Image 1 (tube, rainbow, N blue to C red):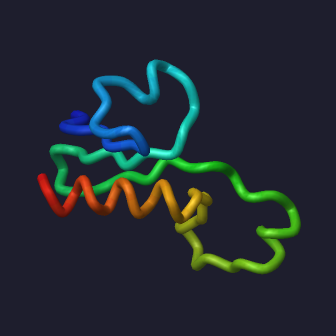
Image 2: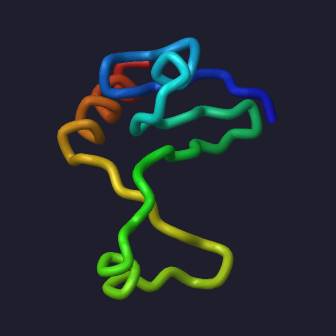
Length: 74
């Protein structure tokens, strides 16, 4: 898979937040979107249960809204 676009809180980025860790959505040439977020803590993992082969990351809602607005424009 090749990365086509990375969309984060402050707009499209050529690299993941300048090499740092931050929530983002990576659009691949395989037709999928990949969400980069924060790993869940033990308490959160206890409350959420994903099916086998799936998992969760968390992202502030404000960041998600900013990313969604950019995708709607693109």
